[in-house]
Amino acid sequence: DAKTTQPNSMESNEEEPVHLPCNHSTISGTDYIHWYRQLPSQGPEYVIHGLTSNVNNRMASLAIAEDRKSSTLILHRATLRDAAVYYCILISSGNTGKLIFGQGTTLQVKP
Amino acid sequence: NAGVMQNPRHLVRRRGQEARLRCSPMKGHSHVYWYRQLPEEGLKFMVYLQKENIIDESGMPKERFSAEFPKEGPSILRIQQVVRGDSAAYFCASSLRDSAGANVLTFGAGSRLTVL
Image: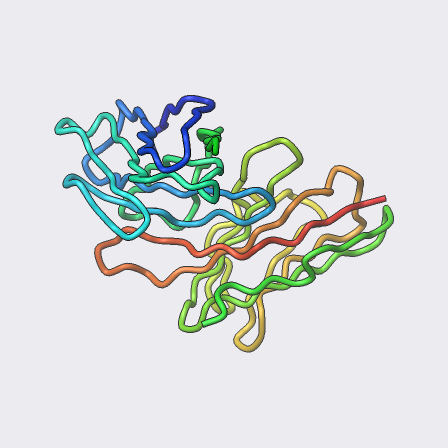
């Protein structure tokens, strides 16, 4: 599975939108873009995933660049409970669940 | 649905003892994964199991570590003769294969092992 690059940390104010970027310039055609997050002292939590088209769910939106070499996770209104480490992970369609978690982006949300 | 259940949540062992960590996957999930997170480090894949089969154990240390997922009962991660370096959070995840091939994992809350 190809590698991803994310900023180490970001800050946001409560109730404002947050855009978390991810670069994956070596993505292949069969790689899905997944986002997980890990709140303090908890296990990782699935957020969203997509292949080519933008995706929305109750937690977030995923915007995928037309060339698929980058993507952005969008939290529409950050809350204090969104403070976590966010991981952008590429998963090939045949992946056996061996996810490669990088350093992720630590999101701080200020009241 | 209770989600992925792990126990114990916290386990303390002395060097040389054995640690057994249990994981019950989500109802209907037949794929189980174990990950380890050392202090101040990222999550690392250890092993992937289906019922009675080890599919991928490429992340398991060669000695002292073993995993099983029997036909009945939870998956077990077993660490024999623990050392201080085994102190970590061990996370179990399970999945139901997505028909599109995008595999979504549901993680448990983890078992935190401390070796004295």
